[in-house]
Length: 233
Length: 305
Image (cartoon, rainbow over all chains, first blue to last red):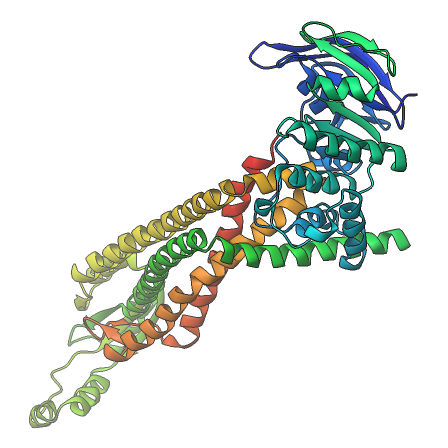
């Protein structure tokens, strides 16, 4: 069985909009996959389904052996602890320092302070922010804030890192830096990475597996390096 | 076994952190916390006043009811045997709890003790002008007049006295007031819960992003709720401090100013000690529970997905 497996997944929102139609795909452990598509193509729904922000209307979504659609509200945290999530808008707490923001993820799980400290520091070291430990998010640049978000996502040592347009708010140079960090996590820690993006440069340059979603349908599954940008994607 | 222990340790740590976060958040969002505390304070003061009134009224009604007796005066020509018959007739009534005989000699002594003039007058007369009597204690004050009317029909009974009219209306007025006060207390408690829940909803609204992030990084629902519940508890307890002070000092001062009774000697106030502490305890528990429930209600809304 694949690490992530979607079988005939449909998603229809309450207002009648079909976001995904009959999507089936499998992703192996340690893979790096881009999910691309236009705005409102359904790629965000695809991503959100992986961490159960959305439930499939039909079909099954399996992540690391858990049937995501069947998890009860009160048990969602069990899935979330296995997944790191990186957002376009960072979602940092402005009143906490960089260290506290990253530690937050471990405190919620109930780890000892003694265990938390080294984990947070090593996560911050990985994203290159060890010297900004005491800063507040408001004092950081966009790229640095995104690094904090990544550090928070990986501090729990998840098997899967889900990134929803992590470079959407960043300039090209900063985006490159962020992608280096994410690629490093994939390479060094063996973390499976699924990243939604509409940044063609990144997709072209990195030559990874690409899933193209168009109007809710899986329009293309390009193996590593075989994807070439074409019109409209 | 080891796994169990670490699980418990985690729960304890989460609990301790929740307390820390709750205290922090009460002070970080002080203006909003202050609003919640103030509304708790005001409503708890009202609850306290209403509660003190209710318990005092209840107490006064009871003591007045206890004092209510029917005094039955017997004819002057009554014989020893007739006295016994009348006694057994009165005792056989359902509503009669106790019948005590009080002879005219006892009345004379009592009145002589009470006033010197009486003594002189009574001693001047050859014959005791007073009448033998029964003092009848009833079970239910509501049926006092019925019982009195029946006793009046027994032969050789001269007059029957009880606080006609005035007593009836006072007792029923007290009953009505007591019911109104109970309704007010309950209404105030509901209003407090509602107000606290709404003010806490405001503080939570300002922190919904924190809740969202907690959910996303894998905090369990109880981990998310706990700080807010503790926060509600803290707000409720702080909000109860001023009402408790007002209750204790206010009631003690009121009691000593009024010398322990209102309007007349009939309505006696409850002694302040122990009573004020009970009321304070009720206020404290009420503040804490209502605070916790209010914030639980508020945070629930943000945990549904």
